[in-house]
Length: 417
Image (cartoon, rainbow, N blue to C red; front, top):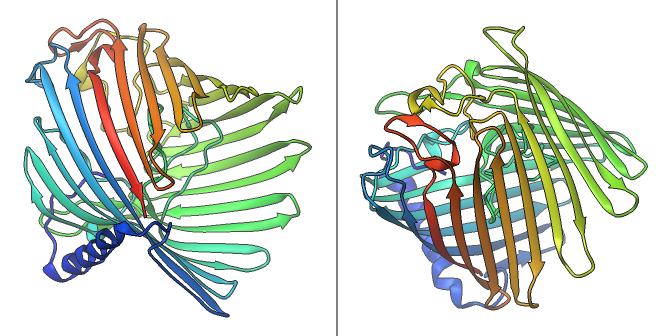
């Protein structure tokens, strides 16, 4: 949800700000929706979400260009207006709009979200230390019949079966270290979910790409667009799927599966072979595999491994060469990873989670602990601490991936109304 640098006109900005202000005034209501209406043929609600987050980081010494300070602080306030409306059994509309205010002691260059126009983003302050932005994160209309659901507009698209690395999630995937995943960013898309048989479904997704234009709106560009087709079916206690995709950088053919072994061990896997458009013979496999089990004590254990065919086996590389401009954006730079996730209900109101990520070939690691306390039915407080382990960089030469990461501590308050 990075802000766009382009300012927008006052009318839509004022309208969106007014809607969000109404949501803020209604925050004293204890109900999960501050406005509801229903009749024989329609139903609609308005809900709000308010979040305050503050983060402090302890930065590595190198590279100095990325970390000019020993410590940094970031603060964020985000207010969302959420709505679902239904007309009969066939039509539904989803809205998710937000107003975000951020401040930071360091400037971070953020690319605009992929696969979404900046026409629904309004920025009235954007400098090195503070940003004020309003945007529509989701705005989608769905038509549902007995065998078809067609959704058009800005919507969240997820094709993932695994949890941490999700190579088949092509559109705005979460990072493996993201604990809070309530709002997946939307992309501008048309999606058809077709029921082929009782347990068989076809999903076809087309997502619009855009070409940046100076001092103006992004322009639709079919060359930067993407399309995915996936067929899934249920066999016994397992779900199996196959997919094919065209992305701006090449083509992908993949599959996914999830089920249970021995009635207690959860198994999930997904992956694809990526064929770069400029060299279809240079196949890059991307595969994630997960084992998980939820104990009666509420302890949940997830182990996941990820083979990243587009990654590198050379840990000592220039930072400038780690991200290729000719390929898809890479969230991870290494070739082989493993992750361990644990979660446990310490008390009925306090939940703990942790994750450990390891770049096996570096080697380097990243660990994070997440504590979530339920203040009330509508409010929660979260604390997140992270510590990286790895060889530090030397100037612009990275000697390990997670050695580039800062240590951090974040406090996060969230209210739903």
